[in-house]
Length: 91
Image (cartoon, rainbow, N blue to C red):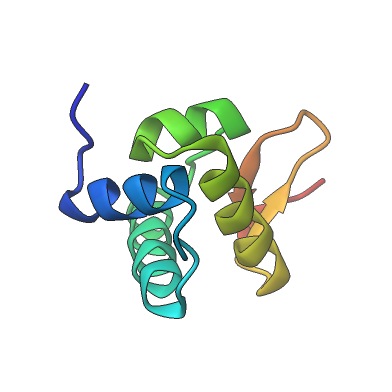
């Protein structure tokens, strides 16, 4: 399966090659893309596995992005284990 986004190749390839996949530029690009999707679809609620599939991310990359999005209070993990916009989450 081909990644949906052109820069998926770089991020995933770097992670597999042991490179610095977490450069601030790559992380910032992904954060901006993911934020845009959540803003466009306010009811979006994804498990970690769904999050990985939606953007065709390696598990370690997805985990880092989810941690960062929670750190900046954009996403919140619900009791059911899904990630939703923090400003819209009630539980």
